[in-house]
Image 1 (cartoon, rainbow, N blue to C red):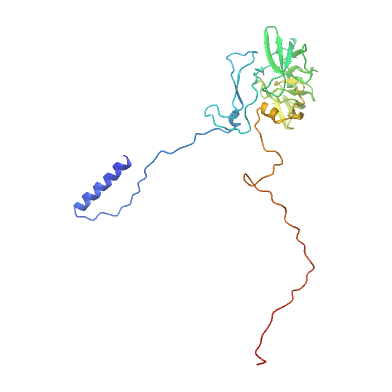
Image 2: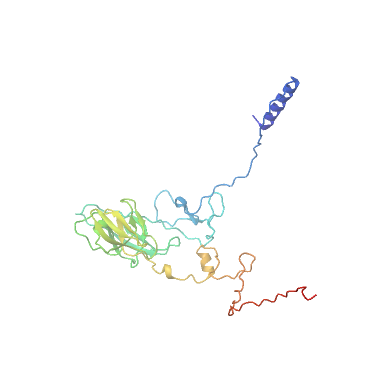
Amino acid sequence: MSATAMLRRLVLQGTQTLAAGTRPAAASCQLTISRDYYKPKYVPKPGIKGKAYRRIVHFKDEYTVEPLEVTNLAGRDPVTGRVVAKGIGGGIKHKYHWINWLRDGPTDLNEKPKEERVLEVLFDGCRTSHVALVGSGKELYYILATMNMKEGDILRTHKGVPRIPIFPNEGDCYPLGALPIGTLVNCVEKYPGLGGFLIHAAGCCGTITDKQGDRVIVKVPSKKPFSLDQHCMATVGRLSNELHGVTPIGSAQRNRELGNRPRSGLWQRKTGRHGRKIKPPPKVRAFDPYEPEKDNTIQLTLNGL
């Protein structure tokens, strides 16, 4: 029943009661008419459930080494178009190279490791580390390049865990249980068969510090130790482009090309219009030696009259 119909019904009942000559009973009611109001649409915050607002990669149905098209979001939600991440904006368009995180190989210890040749090491504008195009037979795919990886290198991959640890070369991929303590690793699996999940940034690497039964302790770049299954695959070596974190950007235009919007500097004098006005410091207050104040009160009497 609508609010208008309810109001008419109450008025009609009161009229009939007065006509019958009886005093109406005291009653109180409050009518609230609901009105439509604006409710802002919920916009997820950046970083929730792995949602990113920098770019959208148009993946294809099957894996391909063909560079993929990219749509830059500039910090906006792809559905509503509202700005969510204010520090992101524009940037040069780059092609995306699809990384194959699963390094497959034989599991039988009697078989030789799978060999792959590095065909090209190239720059990828959508990630900090360089990527390498490797091939084996009719297979072609991209992997993250290590620091000393170059064209023509032979990479070996095996998924078996021998009784005695092996001594691999940089770029080889083996289970954590097959590598000796102290080996530098990257693209480490969190669970067997998941694919390289940990340590992707340029110049980063983890270290195998200990082995406890069928578990291997890996210290990640944040100095936190992770206990992983010995069958988790890992690539040997430190990731390439190790100078990425210490290379200065150089200019504001270069920062815009990287897709970063301007930010206020470390020292910015305020004028008072958009923030706190910087005032001069107060004068130095000097304290003189204490001297008791003299009583200068004048007292008048009428004794002389």
